[in-house]
Length: 163
Ligand code: RP5
Image (cartoon, rainbow, N blue to C red; front, top):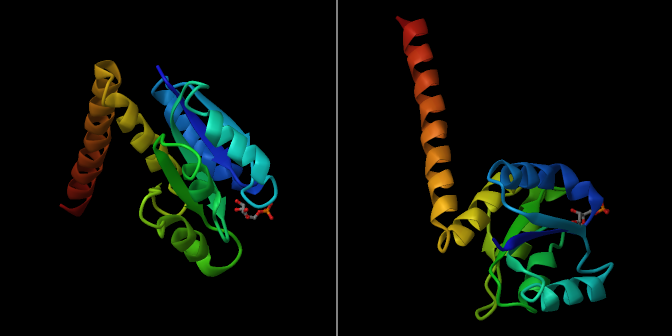
């Protein structure tokens, strides 16, 4: 199976990426996780992206806050799918990072998930790998069924309480 590459702009983003790693681990998907910043370590970001395909990655998740250029900078140097997570930092509630990540110019796409959307980034990367992996697709189906069952249990508990 191809690996998922996870890159975050700062260790202050790590709590969000822990959810990404946990979700990938729950699906037995291999990943690597790195701290590289589009602004503070641009050379490392470029090298990672340029070599990602030959290094066995199938998809890259890039998380950053503030003027979040990390996902776009990675996407500029690879044709692997790139998923951007806008991270909420101290100002503007993460809307700064959301707009910086989602508003890519034509030709260089980034699939942007919700602000702090670490879980969905992992699930979307899994769905990308599952296009060519029936076993992984079956795991994703099973997870959705389990998630639905949990909601219906809560619904049943609520209805019992309200009677
Ligand atoms: C971004 O700036 C990082 O991704 C982080 O979300 C934000 C703040 O970084 P630190 O100042 O906490 O290192 O590049």
